[in-house]
Length: 284
Image (cartoon, rainbow, N blue to C red; front, side, top):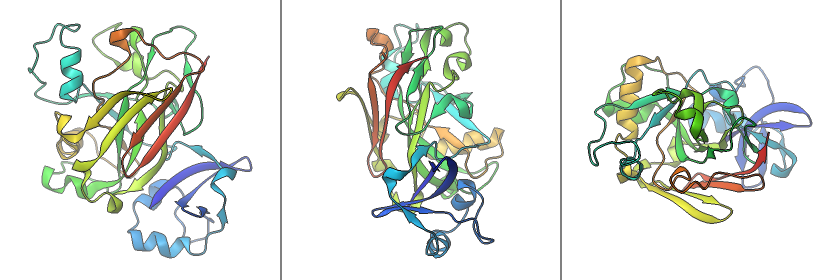
């Protein structure tokens, strides 16, 4: 199923996207209070609850980031072979000398927007770059999770544009500054639950700018798999439902050709089985 957060008639809500519209969580005593709670339910439980929820047209809601209040948003830098290789000369790295451990950073929840909402080029920089990624959303809490059990802790998957302000990213050897400008990235359009993605190794991602294909990712390009990332990250953090792991962007970033995002551009991140996250670009 597709889990979404949205604004309806000026109020925030959440529910399930279907072919016929959006089932809006009604807030009764059995209803979870947020997407986090839905992620923690078995698929059958969610269906049973949703039978009593009112339905509205998808066009009547404004989609928000699927998880409004994640405890953690953990990014993984240079987690694809293609992106590592394309930046090796620029960053004075040895081609093929991939990192031994995932390179982690964090993002804040106000650094991304939902589907359809403009991402913002900050007034202090013109170097906003796109990075299409697959977001893994945790559905079952855990710490020190084994690789063998890792996939069972995934609640679902979403598209992510891990927008990066490149000049600020290069101010130090810590990339956090360039990864957290307000509304510089996007997340959505919804979470597709893991029961609908039985083999995540078959997922394919494509990033388009104004319709032009710039990036394509298949799972054999990852340096660290989803299971390896969850196992490693859970050694550090206690993962809880709604936490988000950004799993890495492939070759094709704009920084190498200085093709920065400009006002009026449109960024589309498409992941097979999940859908397309689309955002216009605007100046601050």
